[in-house]
Amino acid sequence: MIIQRVEHNRRRLAMHVHICESSIERGRGLLFRRRPDQRTAYLLRRCSAVHTIGMAYALDIVFCNGTGRILRIVRDLRPFRLVRHPEAAQVWEVASGVAAKWGWRVGDEIGPC
Image (cartoon, rainbow, N blue to C red):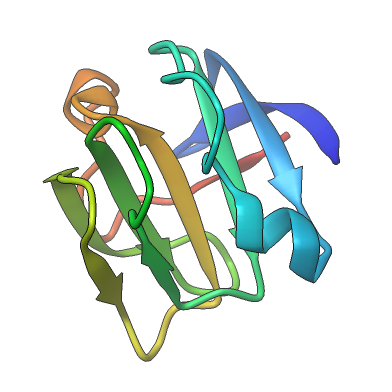
């Protein structure tokens, strides 16, 4: 797993992203981990769906295309849910409220830097 900074619309954020490349890393994501803080994200590459089965807390889920353009934001996704976006190439998992805190909106670009 790679850890990098996060960029939003070409502006660097005080945030770290854990990049999940392998199928095992993507499958785990935040499962069995403590609730992330407001400055931590998990980026699941080659992914278009996530579940919160077994999670103990809600998440914001951000679906992006291959270039990092936000396609959909699912805010405050509660445990034991499944969401997907057929056009997504990557998914960001962040603590509930983080997408709003950083001002992320559909059409914006986010990515590691």
